Length: 339
Image 1 (tube, rainbow, N blue to C red):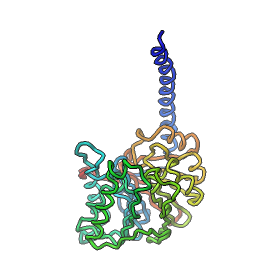
Image 2: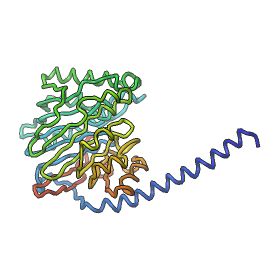
Image 3: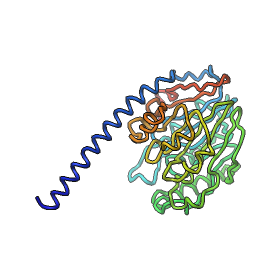
């Protein structure tokens, strides 16, 4: 047997058992994850506010982030979901802009059909987080009090992100839209604000110099939402490799609900990060089948945390009740919505 064939044979003996192990691991974590998910009796959302109006809406925008905050009749939007013109796509791509617009106008509109958002926040400038903001900001039926968009720093990113992925251009278009509508633009993001019954803390509002060049995920702004004794952390694309999990974990402290970072992909929700935050449950803006096996393992086998995919549940609302509970409801999108 020549050296080339021998190398192929050795590689096969290594790769095949590895792939089988990963496959079995994935099956095991899915089974255990489904059992853990039964801890919460998730009922279909009725929009009757029977559990109160302090809510976090995790929209189903596939594997992209769009989160609507609601408290005392006020609304705010964190990220906007994937847009329709992602420069990374070689062909025309249908995103979730219309779905987000329809949801806002259905759930958050007043009697005159106007949507009033106290603030919008772009956590960072990957298109699957801010791609629909341009259309949202331009829409005459949507009024925005304050636009929180941290100034984009190309030095934080890899070169391909700045130009090939169009992050610089995306940022410039969003800021131009904000200015055209004379919206209050805040680029020095405050660390704390009050929003209805929620106290909100923003993390990573100023970039860490030692994370330059690690990519735009290292610019991600995390949001901690607290009511009474319960809190949620919305982790944007905060990951271990970005350096942010190590820097922010201790500062965030204990939470009850984690919106997992980076859609459950590479680097998300490390064991050490979960040990610092100790959440009771997690919501992942993705489908369960796309969450990386090691991330599922960290939630189920390491921490025993049930997790729920927004795609699998057609969107999820977490209601923070006055009695100190978090109640989950699903199917927040209705049949017939334009996607």
